[in-house]
Amino acid sequence: MRPFSALVLCVLCTCTTLLAAADTPEGLAFYEKEIAPLLVKTCGKCHGAEAIQTKKIKGKYLMDSWAAMVKGGESGKASVVPGNLDKSTIIEAIRWKNEDTAMPPKEKLPPAAIAAIEKWVQMGAPHPDKK
Image (cartoon, rainbow, N blue to C red; front, side):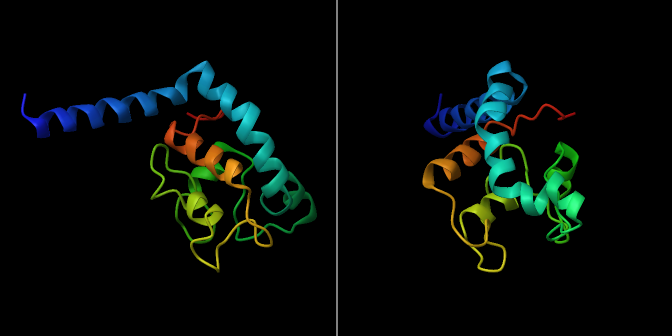
């Protein structure tokens, strides 16, 4: 096998493995244990159930369901693109790459929290509502 062919095969296998993790009990457990509490704590006030109740939804973006997370907000871009960090606007926001869209707005998440969300997206963004 040529070196380039071996590299392509290795990349495809890795991507397939990461995307398959989304449907596993381990992937869902990671979401439930690590991601859901983090999103509720850091994003819920402006993008969750509390924002719905107080009618203070920011950016017309909700994180209360899988459909809402994939749809995104007023930008029209998907917040979460399973397996793709570069196309997931949530990653750009939590990395504070753009001053106008940096989230949370007042204080950057700790590196461990950013790493957890990145891992979740790379895993295929497991979510119990995912269809």
